[in-house]
Length: 565
Image 1 (spheres, rainbow, N blue to C red):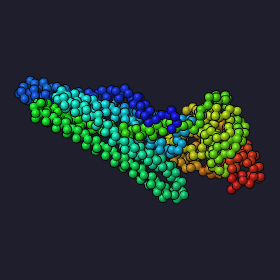
Image 2 (cartoon, rainbow, N blue to C red):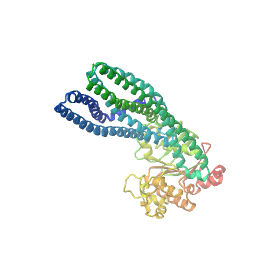
Image 3 (tube, one colour):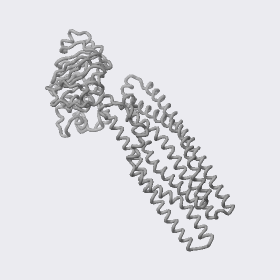
């Protein structure tokens, strides 16, 4: 975690601070509710001393009306306090989810580094909910403390020893509870860590289910998930055991404490120091104290788990960005000249490229890692460890990542579709809602896909477009990239699942649609490469050859092996 980044404490304070009005309102109502609860046994004691013992009907009626009023206020305060309390918890969790989403979607990236997508989802759901629960628990805690204070005052009026017993005994009891909660905090953090990892593995397996079935790796995948799930289950059981031990230990301590209060009260009554009504009130208050103590036990456990979750959330919020935003303005207009000078990153080794504006350029590499690193550098998802990438003479490191991606659109091979209509998926790449998508649909041959669907372009696709075949998904994804019409478009293997006839048609239409705008095709498709102005061959992370597709196919053995094999 970088210096100065948010910590778990910052996350908790932010969550509580955002909901301070709801927490304050809920706490005041909760305190009123607890005050009325504490006063009920006191009033019952007064009924015994002033009405039952004296036989006064007027006193009996008067105190019964007071008791009814207490219950009316008690129930009203409880309902409204519960509403505000739940609102504070949900509001705090929602704000945390917004912060996490903003960090994950930050153009500078870095939040997903070393984390599976499913793990991020688990943090944004389970951990955010637990931190939100702290906001709810705080109001319960303040209400419980108010109940303890009011009970102590009432007991002091009945008997100074009883009141002092409560006032002096509660702080050590709370401190012991804090010590007991430490193992629960540690095991809760481990539980959430294992649960997040299990969610990430599950999401990965579901995303690659077709591939796993295709290569017959279902049993290996099931074994992997079974091991991960068992590890998560073991962590959850350890955390549950800690919670049970924590709650049981606290309950035993509070039970002993309340029993001591009852015994002291009984002793004082036997000596005649307090009346029968006061004894009843003292015993009633002792029984009432079980409620606030149970609340404090619950609050202590919620804080222990919330602190563990807050630390995990802080780890994501404090993750360093993958790239740093520059302050230079984007060239206006963007002509589309790309230059790479000595770019070294991952599998790339000192790559020098000069792509003229408006050109249709093919890039071929047999190493998928080199293709991926090139895409990451062009889309400024990573900055090269050495060398520079320039757009119209301006280094990408001098530009804001958002500006770079408005000018250079990198369409990755594994682009996902959304659970929406085909047309909405294509329009997702356009600047305006009413833009004409017909040219993009035709150029990508996605119009044929629409014709085969029951409701044409208005047909709603299932999650990630799984209702379409692999080739159909590729065509729709390509249409979305073309609809964006960026000054520079970089496309990675857009037709690997498309038949050769359709692929040839896409190659011809793509050139016409992108005429005058820079287009880079990172592919080994002969049909697409045949329509390019120039092809650049990368071998061992370096530029090995440059020329037209026919020239390289005839003169370069490595190129033939990569493209025609």
